[in-house]
Image (tube, rainbow, N blue to C red; front, side, top):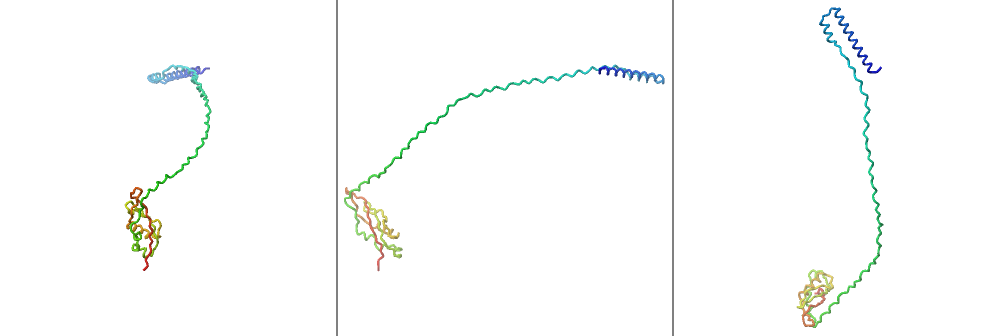
Length: 215
């Protein structure tokens, strides 16, 4: 028997049983002398109704098929073009000989010839009196310092000494300094003349002996 037929028979059976119960109640009410209202109320409450048969459930629909996924083929990547590079050729190495440095011969220019002297310069007076024992430095005198100082004087065209330097020291700075001091102060010269008779500078050398006088 089908499931629908079973449900229908059950419902019919229930309906028939309820009708039988209702009739039994009504008959009992008549027998026991129940009031009419009670019977009417029971009859109103117990109304019959038709049981509609339920439609069988629709068959299960098969699930919809999954949407088709369109798989695109991977893009075709063209290989890069092959570039042929010419091999690099190194330039040839050319050895250039380095010339030797030039030899520079430094030659001093020839010294100008000395001007002709028509008359040499000479001291005026006695050069031995330009420096005396009275000019002895007191410190060297107390220390009994003695020696010979050689000096060179530069004499100008006017016959006056303008510069003095010691070419040979006495060994005592005080005696050497005093020698130049007194020569520059006391020396006098006759100017030296060139070939044209014009005064010209010249050099004069003198030695001074420093000796402590004996009493």
